[in-house]
Structure formats: C-alpha cells, structure tokens
Image (cartoon, rainbow, N blue to C red):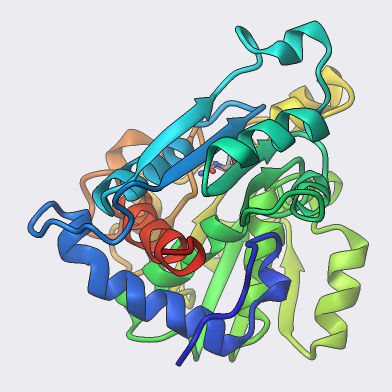
Amino acid sequence: MSFDLKNIISIRDFSKSDINYILNLANELEPIANSKQVCHDLDGKLLGVMFYEPSTRTRLSFETAMKRLGGDVIGFNQKQGTSIQKGEVLYDTAQIISQYSDAIVLRHDMEGAARFISNNVDVPVINAGDGAGQHPTQTLLDLYTIHKNMGGINNIKIALVGDLKYGRTVHSLVYALAMYNVEMIFIAPAELQMPPEIINDLEKMNCKFRMSKTLYDNIDDIDIIYMTRIQKERFPDAQEYNKVKGEYTLSAKNIEDSDVIVMHPLPRVDEISFDVDKLPNAMYFKQAFNGVPVRMALLDSLIEK
Ligand code: NCD
C-alpha cells in the first residue's frame, strides 16, 4: 500500500485505500502518540501552523503529533502580533511560512483558502478547516474512532445532529461515509439542514440517508450519534442564531439504557450535558485524543524525509 496525496485539502480527494492507509498507520503510531515509544521519523523537520480562526484540539494535536514524531513547530494561532495586522495577505504570509517549514497546516475563515495556498507553495498543505467548507483531518479521526468502536465502517447507522448547514466537520464526514455502507440521519431544524448541493452529491453517490427534526424519536436503532455545535460565528444575523440555539441537548437520561456511541468534534456548548461524560457511551474525549495518531499518520506520510 502507498499514499500518494501531496496535500490534504478535501476528504473528496481520498480513495478508500488512502483512508485505510492512514487509519492503519495511525493505529501503528498509537504507542508513540501515547508516549510509550519514541520516534525520530521527522527529526529536524518543521511544521508551519497558520491559524486565522480559534482552535484548541486541531492545533494542539497537530503540534503534539509533529513533536511526537521528532519534529518541531513554528507559526501563529491568531492574527494579532503578525503582519496580517499590517495588511499582509494570505498568499504572501504563506509564501514566507512555506520557506521556513516542511509543511503547512492552515485554518482560515474563507472556503477554498487551503486549496488556493496548496496551488501556490512548494510544501504540502493541510486544510485544518476552511470556513464552512471542509475539515478533512477531523473526518479521518472521526473515521478512526468509528472504526475502533464498531470494528469497521460498514453496516452502521449514524445520526448527525445540530448545525448541518454551517458545520464543516459534517460537510466532510458525509462524503467519507458515503463511500461505505452506512445509513445517515440528518437531524436539524429546517434552517440548519444539510446544504442542497451536498444532498445532491449524496444522491448521486447512491448513499442512504434521511432527514428529521427530532432527535429522541430516532435514538433507539442508531449506532452512533454525532452531535455538533451550532456555529454561532457563521450566522449572518444574531437573531437567526438565537432562534435555533439550544435546539438539541443530549443528557444521560436519553441514552443510559442504550449502546449508542456519542461523538462530537468539540468544543461543546450545551449540546451534551455533563452527566453524559461518565457513561460508557461518551466517546468524544477519546475521539479528540485520536486526533494525535491520525495527524501523526498524515504528517509522517506527507513530509519528505
Ligand atoms: C470543529 C471546527 O473547528 O470545525 N472543531 C474542531 O476542529 N474539533 C467544530 C466546531 O468548532 O464546532
């Protein structure tokens, strides 16, 4: 098996064999992610992180992944204190970071930003979220988590709940799941349902899905609930946000008699109450850890040695 992608921009660039390659390698790298073994694969290499939007897990798990592989990290996690404040454009900043580092991880509010930069620099570019567009590395760690829990990715029924309109994690995840034998239920208020162009693509891919507004009527025969945060920052109008905030909240009493696995890309606001955390169903913190071996697998595959 080999991995030939040069950049990680959209999950739609991945074949099933690319996904398998990364999930298998992530599994092999777990002892290093867990600090049980030491690795020198990326000794002397530098990762350039460019984060124009807030992040905790994505940025820190990339940094952890790079350092666990023996490499190091440069970059910024806010515009403040950089020349972006003086008016430097993304293209110019990326030219510079690409000369100082061996790969770039970019999070930006503009859809298409990572693709644009990957076409204009000489090092691999990884999309860590481009506006409401894609978040492919999150999808890979989601798939890894699903695989670990279900013994594979086929024959599962998954409910995606919350902000399906603006949520880039679900925009990525559905394209990956559509490659497998998976049944999806999109649970959202009408205003926050999956964008029509994505629905269109899923229909073309012959994928099994349906839409619903209610969460609790659907819980009994579901294997995985994937909760998401309402993406407040992407609403053009605060009143629209106020209408839908707090629409779905999962608490222990909804699921304690069930085997359903609860995932969430995090951060949570009020979608999952704290009493769920102690149930065996709660997988979201482990899911966030899985970002480390999965991002190690990506960096190890992409960065030239
Ligand atoms: C997500 C994101 O940034 O899209 N966070 C993450 O990377 N785990 C989800 C979110 O912000 O709600």
